[in-house]
Image 1 (cartoon, rainbow, N blue to C red):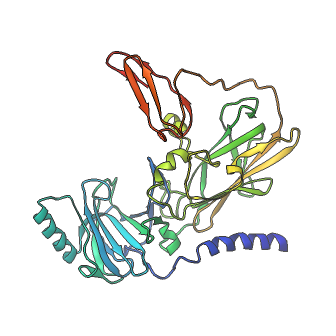
Image 2: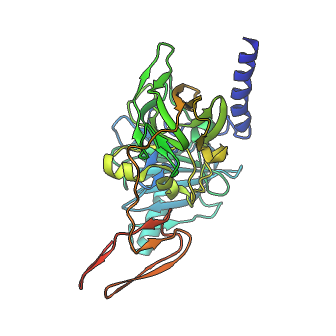
Image 3: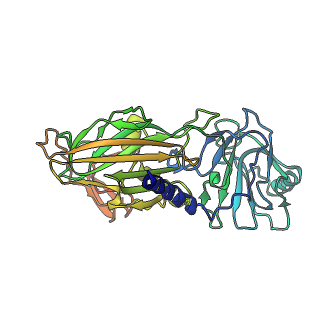
Length: 403
């Protein structure tokens, strides 16, 4: 009992140590109403990770938005798209807070913006005030909430960025909503990853069923498998005050108790966010509208959210006739936890459903640029255009090229 408690303490303490450099008393909530999230940091969106918190405004616009900390207005952007009317405040410790989808700015800032718009003869404008022009104290009124830009309903988009303009998880700084709900697991998929791999006598990916146990954990159906495998999970988080499908904070996987992968949504850079399409099973999302994230790291996936990996998170099952346990532990930022266990019988069997790859004359390599002549057409594919190597299905007519 003592050993188990000590292990749990050390694991939790490791998470606290990782967050020890994040101040807990610098930033305040930017709205004066109870905090309820419509969206959270790291949420899986179309082609990108969500870079902030979407805070509900009780279906209203015009709520007072206050400076989360003291500093100066360093950037103002007014656009028909994106964040709409947005405000950026730089703080003495190097962090920047971002406030998006605003209806209008506080009077002094609004007057500053209107003057610049008239001079530029443009509604859309981007401004970078000097540090001494628009200074604010913590709690000062800086804007009013709205629904401008690419917003699907009234809310405030709020971010905290580090000195290198990388979005950070604002919940780590104490901007949180009441949350006593465990993360939800919606989908579980297993992938044979090599010619030698098989799951239930098949070389194709399979969706697995799972059920909730009396102790609150989830148990998946037992599989018979051999060779290198990968798993993927579809998961969301929800807080007490809303049923929005929000993003999770941490995922940890283990094989027979040994950690194989750790994912942590603490921060990322805008330069890497489009690699979300590499992390998820994009084909499944396009075909089934199921967004599952792979718990193994494929080539051309440089995401910094992977904090630990052993063998890229790939499970290599070679001890024919033995058994294994693969587990997935999912946490939100307030340490609510959901655990899923997959029992595995390691068994090399006759493959009844082989994966026979369709070949064509047009084989593209992800790490090399190539030219193809197709009829009267010439097709150039640059280095890095694809994540993987593929046989392309290409046909040409006089007026059209089909790829």
